[in-house]
Image (cartoon, rainbow, N blue to C red; front, side, top):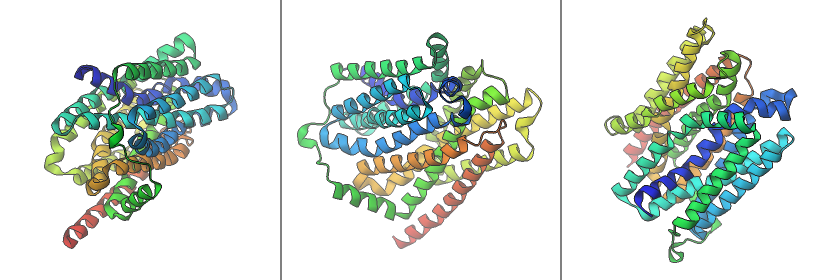
Length: 400
């Protein structure tokens, strides 16, 4: 397999989660209209149930791949993903749909997490960083095109066609990997699955104060992003009457916000991770407070809509300046147990974020006020925690 083909395959496995979330956005009104017309406010649960399953899967996929090999766990995860997508396609109630989406998220974590381990198996140092950067560059384009692709599928095949597209996408990835990619973790390098070692590592992770705080802030940052994703479709459709152009606006915002990762890479070495996160959350507090106090989202058209698009873009941009830095802060003291730490940090923060975003998504009342209020509260908590983290790091530095 050439390097170009390898990057393309890894990017496709990375894209499983983004495709499974963002392509669903245009389908939410039709799904709840068919399955639960009396409970349309529960539409955001279709997204957060997937995220919840993904969080649980993130915790177990890494250790399982260390014990049983990379390809087996990808096959297992893809199988769960395809089976649950088929159940969702055939579902006749919202409850069955939500259960299927939890399992689908559980399965999607396999390709997403194990693909990172595959890159580490084959590359190290600067080569690994280069491969990962290219993969992430491709990955950031998926949220830009997924809603538009989802709208095209719905137009041709209805909302159930989305789940057929998920099945086709996963099967193509699985066949490609099975034919072209050899197992990257030899049997002699595998680590037995020992629960007591995993539990010991988990205890060590949560006993470290800076790791605990960074996980909490990462959970809040992800919850802000998930809250936006759960509410963005009804806001465009019902508040601003932009149903037809929603995929195009979403694509434009995603492309603009994608530059945040490039900016972060350019300045993080100079200013440091904690300072960048603190400043970004402080800016979000100012923006959200301004939106609420001046009620900018309710301005006459097109000014109210323009204000919301700016708010949405800034929130997506915030993710590029916070999530990677917060993950690095959490991982920095855990280098000796990096594998299990990566799974635990990602899993805990994702599950907590889904738990926070789920009730927020149900608060939609025909205005943007619940979303902006929730973002303001979460940004304020994250800002205070980052200030506390500064004092914790200062104490640790003195103790050392």
